Length: 171
View 1 (spheres, rainbow, N blue to C red):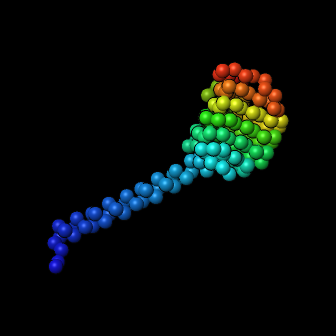
View 2 (tube, rainbow, N blue to C red):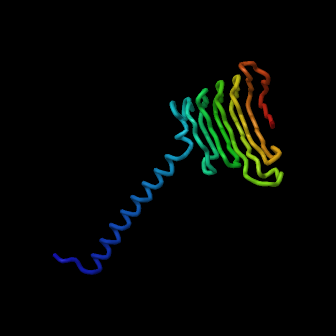
View 3 (cartoon, rainbow, N blue to C red):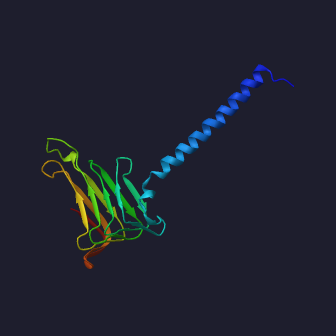
């Protein structure tokens, strides 16, 4: 039984569509694997995400959602560019001694506020231990850099310095 020209074209079209759908699915999965989920060096986003290595952020990785997050003494989230970065947790956030979040600033000669980075942390309890650091760089004169922390409790070196129903700090 020979295929007509019309049936051959339909078969080729069908095969081409399946091939393209497969490529799209593979590309979508690759894009998903580069999301902040890969920041967890151990644990997972549903229970406890532990960062104990250096991870460099880019402008596509600007939101991190999880339950609990710990940045250990060898952990670091860093960016060399000016960016807004949101850490939104349903549980607690801890930076252990020498753990760091460091966001850069854009290279500009002006002192415009828009050239700095903005770090926003939303969690139930935020705990910053001795030598743990949140560094957000601004423009040439450090203008435009913002750290927002929204939490029910803020612990510094294990000491509860603030406890409210909803603490909002704009540092």
